[in-house]
Image (cartoon, rainbow, N blue to C red; front, side, top):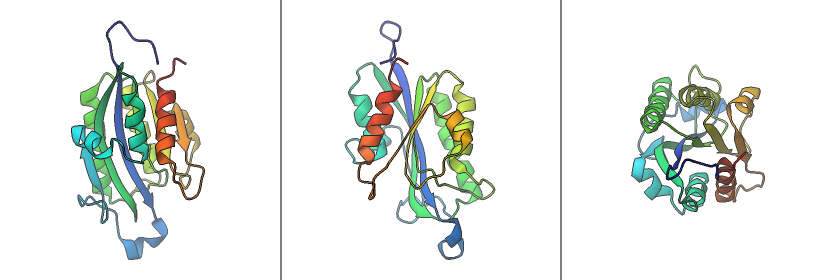
Length: 196
């Protein structure tokens, strides 16, 4: 665990925008939009609702929460997790709405020692070829260079040079079927709390 001042908690925010975009199937799938139901579009969980929904689940986010629960000196600050399993490119307005929601909630949680992101790695939006990189860039600008940004991602994602510069740590599922999401979430977050 990173050393902190006596009695000071290590403040780690949880957030995410998870979608496997199928840009080649846009004509049949349409644009991905916020619907409030993860089977038809994006559904979001914020604040305590995020913790309640994902604690103990076999997901990246569940792994994040399980890992941080082990450290009493960590204060978990849930922002928003937006998720839709797979769909066409994200509609421009919906992407901007979700991005703004995440950034606004992170800004309210500042100062932060780290941000743990649940991303797929294959998200695109209208006018934004790489949604995850765009989001990570905005988060890095918000939290500054000292806060760690860590992410657990799917093995079907696209990793750019910019991602490598923006993220302090990334774990990627390496088995098919990807049945060990929780392990990768745990690994990602255990590394986020290391001294170095």
